[in-house]
Amino acid sequence: MTERSASKALDARVVRAALKPLPKDAGKETRGRVLIVGGSLRYPGAILLAARAALRCGAGVVTIAAARSVVEAIAGEDPNVTLFPLAEAQAGVVSAAAAAQVSTVTSERTRVLLMGPGLAHAPGTDDFVIATLRNARSVATVIDADGLNALARTEAWREALPAKTILTPHDGEAARLAGGVVPSGAARVAFAERHAREWGTVVVLKGPVTVVTDGKKTYVHDQPNPTLGVGGSGDVLGGAIAALLARGLAPLAAAASGVWAHGRVGALLASETGESGALATEIADALPRALREIVEGR
Picture 1 (cartoon, rainbow, N blue to C red):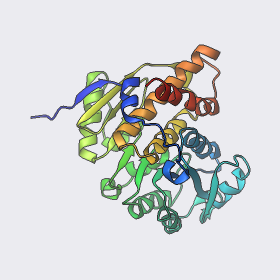
Picture 2: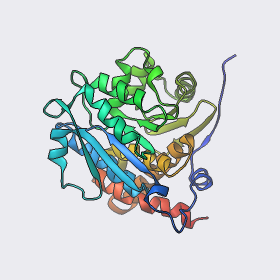
Picture 3: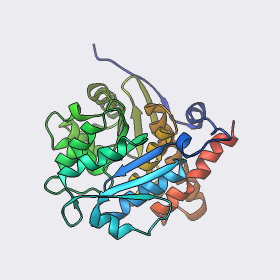
Picture 4: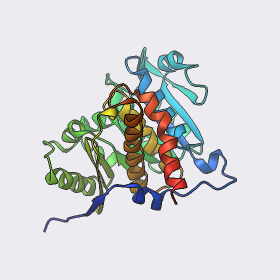
C-alpha cells in the first residue's frame, strides 16, 4: 500500500504555531549562527542575498564561506556578514580540499549550514559539496541550487546527507534528483511526499504552488505571485529557511515558515509596487515585516 501524508494549506496559523517570540535577553548565540557555503565569480550575488535574508529573519551571526577570489570580490558589500575565504582550484572555483576548511567552521558553534547558493559547477565542486556534507553530519543543513545539482551528479548521494536536511529544489532540480519528470497537480504533491520519505529529508518543492513535506506531514502554499519571479528570489528563500532553522524551529516548521514569509512578502510588495519591478534585495528586506505580522497577530 502506498503511504499517504496528511496535507493542509500553508497559512499564517501554521507559522504562528511554530514561531515563538525571541526571549527578551536573546543574544546572537540564542538566535543561532548560519554558515552559507557557495558563490562564484559568475554568481557572487547569490550568497549575499541568502545572507541578507538570513539576517533579516533573525539569525544571530551569518558567515559566508566561498572561494578566496569570490570573498575578495564581495568584501565590503555587506558589513553585517563575516567572510571565510576557501582554497581555490582556480580563480573563483573552490578546491575540493577546502571541505576540511569548512569543517573547522561548522565545528565552531555553527547551528545551520546552507549549501549551494551561486556555487556554479566546475571540476572538483561536486567532490567539495559531498565532502563538506559528510563532515557536517551533526549540523542542520539546507541544500539549494548548485548544492542540489552536485547531489544529482553523485551516486549514492543520500548517504552524504546530514541527519537534519532540508532540500529546496524547483521542479527541474527535483527531476534530476529523482531521475524522472515531476508531475503536475495532486500527483506533484504525492511526488514530493514520496521522495521526502525515500531521501529522509524535508522537501520544499518550489514553484507557483510550493509543497513542503517531510513525507508524513505536508503543507501546500497555493498563492502564486509573479512579484517573486525574479533572479535571486530563491536564494532569499534559502536564507530565510536557514535562519528559522537556526532559531530553533524543527526542520519542517522552519521550511514551512520560510515559504510562508517569502510568499507573504510577495503579496506585500505587489500591493505597494505592483506585480513587477521588485528586486531580490527588496524581498529580503521585507521579510521582517512578514514575521512581525506573525508575532503581533498572536
